[in-house]
Image (cartoon, rainbow, N blue to C red; front, side, top):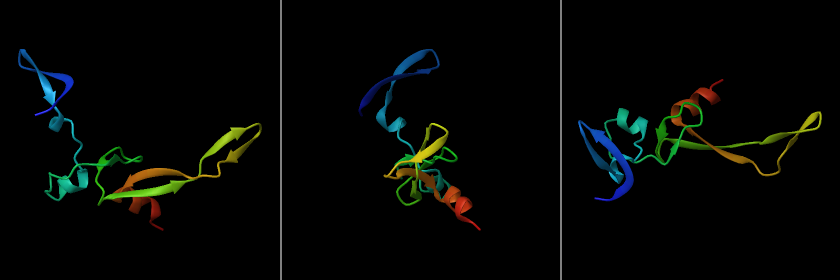
Amino acid sequence: MAWVGLFVLVGRHIRPLLKSELDMRCYDCLQEARSDITGIGVCSRCGLATCEKHARVRQVQVTRQVGMGAASGRIPARRVVCRTCDMAETAH
């Protein structure tokens, strides 16, 4: 058991949190009754944790305000979305 330096109040007692209590669990895996899968990221759209199987990493062009217009960066940024949000964004 590894402690992470955070504490939780249980009744009238304070005890340290275990690292296993802070692990993210993939929401889609929980819906599939697979609670042992650790999440690798958080969907930038809905905020739910997602695992490697359910995550989609998309590229997005970053723009910034320059004077009266906008300038685009040469290198695209990454954005993590869950499978559900990815399907909703790409549905035509």
